[in-house]
Picture 1 (cartoon, rainbow, N blue to C red):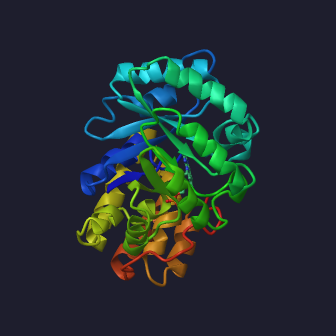
Picture 2 (picture 1 turned 90 degrees about the vertical axis):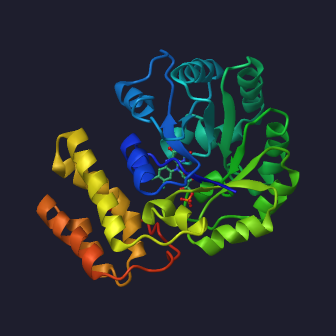
Length: 326
Ligand SMILES: Cc1cc2nc3c(=O)[nH]c(=O)nc-3n(C[C@H](O)[C@H](O)[C@H](O)COP(=O)(O)O)c2cc1C
């Protein structure tokens, strides 16, 4: 089984990927947050920074594109191949309103004929880079998926990652295991499962239930517990000391990159939103970390979490309770 870090915009930056890999090696691929290639055919400065081969050296990073225009996809995939990437992922899963309103991400699933033309074009030009796909089950109804799967099956998709929710489910409505089981039966492509796995047992369940699944992609739970893949692979859970070292390395790296400890703190809070769930009886610490305005307070309360709270052996359900932290 291969294990992947899911792309998470605002969290899994090049610094996060590199530092995670340094402290917790074992993840087979790191999918990068999406880039939306513009019609002007130029990456923004920010996109270039995250895609830079030097900054991703030693990290098995896979870029992701979000677009509904084949011409823009082909341009961007060519650039990525030129930078040395061997795989590019097409985002057909993003449920955010601003993205789907433009018919991109999971919004593209509402236009199967246009999607077919798009896939014909991007798989038809013999790009020097493999194309994988990350998809949801549909827009409104999982009954949309059999036709979509029939479409994907016709192309040399390097790997199909299925997040078994529809667009309207966003991230919090339950995943749809029955629809995934049906998809796994009909899928003729290398298949990856993604969605709501929190524990070693959750991953074992997927492995046991779906022999056709070759890879598992983990997002929120791997942010919450950076040693989760190590545990799945039979290694020990992270100690508080390891977690604190990882945390401080990332915080320092963001401070240097942003030239601002305060901005680094805001970035780290995005991680604490998930990470806090790894600690037993964390309510008081969660409140103080969330509310911290001064970096000194943030640093004191995070250090105290590592030193005073007990680590849970497994993450609980409900990592994403929807209360914003910033
Ligand atoms: C804050 C956030 C940012 C995300 N950014 C992306 C992204 O850029 N591209 C993408 O394909 N999915 C993105 N996702 C979806 C995740 O990759 C993943 O599919 C989702 O979190 C479900 O997996 P999980 O339950 O293991 O977290 C994002 C999710 C979250 C919560």
